[in-house]
Amino acid sequence: MHLLNTLALVANIVVHASATPVEVVKRQLGTATVSLAQPSGTPSQLASGFIYGIPDNGSSISAQIPDHFYTDIKFNYCRAGGAQLPAPSRGWIFGVQEFDNRFASALSNYRTSRKFGARFILLVHDLWGADSLQSSSSVFPGDNNDFSNYNAFLTRLIASLKTNNMIESLDLDIWNEPDIQGFWTRSPEQWVQMWGVGYHRFRTELPGVLISGPSLASPPDRNLVWWNAFGSFISSNNSIPDVYTWHNLDSGLDVAKTLPFIVQWRGRYGLPDRPKNINEYAAPYEQIPSTGAWYISRLERYNIRGLRANWASAFELHDYLGNLLGKPGAGTSSYQPSGTGYWPVGEWQLYKYYASSMTGQRVATSGSADGLFDVYATRGAAANTVRILAGTRGTTGLYDITVTGLSAIGLSSGSVNIRTRRFDNNGQYGEVGAPVDLGVYGHTIANDQITFWVQPETASTAYAFEFV
Image (cartoon, rainbow, N blue to C red; front, side, top):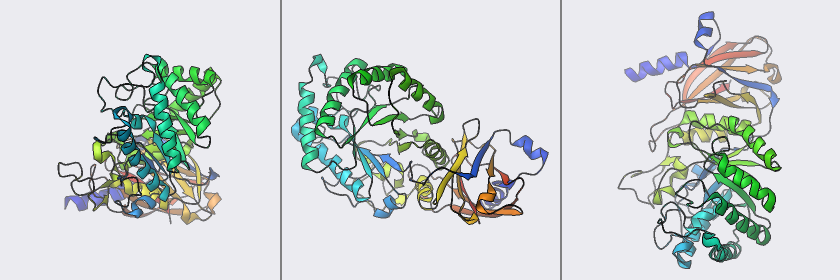
C-alpha cells in the first residue's frame, strides 16, 4: 500500500511543465539547460571506465563475468596493476618471482580489456609493490639517491611488456597518488626524480605507449605543493606526460572548478595542453545513480575521460566491474573470488542506458548554478530521438530543466510528450532491474523551448527523459 502510494506520488511530481508563479518560488535551487540546436560531438562514453574490477585468470582473458555486463555499458578503459594480491604476488620489492606473479594479474586484466576494445592503464607503482599494504620499512625508488634498483625493475617490466605483446592501447601510469602516504612516503623531490627516470626509459624503449600523470589524489585547486613540484620538474626535464591525470574523490571537488586551475598551472610552467583523464572519480558515497549521472554530465561537457574509483580490497578489488555488479557473498565473509552468479546494481543500469540509449549527437548542456544538479543529452534528427539523463550530487532538491532549440528537431509549436524513467538504488551490492517507466507527460512549447521541474524521490535517484 505504501509503495503504491509512493509510486503514484512520484509519477505525479517528478516532471511537470512550468505553470504558475507559486511554482517559480519553489524552483529557486536552480536550472539545468539542454540546447538541442548546439551539437557537441559524437557520444563516446567518456565515463565508461573503472579501476580494477576484472577477475584475474592467470595471465589469460577472464570469462568469469559474462560478456554482456561489459558490452552493455560500452566499457572502454581499465586501470590496474595487480594490487593487494597476497604472497607470492606482492610485487618487485618482494622478489622477481613476486613481480612476475603480480604482472600476470595485470596481463590478464589487459587481455580481458582488449577483448572488449578497451584501453588499459598500467599502474606501475602496484607492480613495484607500493599498494598501501607494504611495510613502513619498504624501499622506494631513489632512496639514498640510488635508482639502480628502480632501473632493474624498469628493465624487467619493459621486457615483460614486450614479450607479452602488452603494448597496443596501453597507458603507463608511473606512480599513483604520491601525495598519499599509503603509496609514497618520500618527498615530492624524490618523486619527481623517479618520474624523470621512468619517463625517459619508457619514452625511449616503448615509444608508442602513452604516459599519463601525475595521478595525484587531489587536483591543483586542493594541493598545489605537489602540482608545482611536478610542473617545475617536467618543464625543465622534458618529461611532460601525454595525458594529464588526477583524481576526484570527494564531494568538495568539481571538475568545473578544477579546470581553470589546470590552465593556470600550465601557464605558470609553460606547459602545453594535453588530453585529460580523471582516472579515479567518485567517493564511495557518490557511487549511486544520482551522482553517477552528475559525473557523466560533467565529464561529457568538458570532454574529459573518467574511470570510476574502486573502494574494495584484496580479491574483491579484482571483481564486480568496479562496484557495478553484485553476486552471492559479495561484501561478506562468504565471498569467493571465483564465484559467479552476477547481477547488476543500480549504477550499472544507469551506465547501460548512457551507453545504449543515448546515441546520435551530444548536445550542449549546462548544470545548475549551485553545482548540485546536472544533465547530459543526445539527439538524432527526429524529435523522438532526444534523450536527457539527469541527476543531483546526492541531494533531493527541486530543480528545473529548460530545453531550448526545439525547432532543430522539427518542433515549433504545440506540445512535447516526454517519458520519464527512474533509476533506483539498492545499496552497494543490491540487485536492481531496468529503470522504472513513470509514464508520459505533455509540455507546452513557448519561444522554442520547454521547462519542467524535477524533484528526486531519494538522494540516490536519477532520471532519464525521452521525447516520444
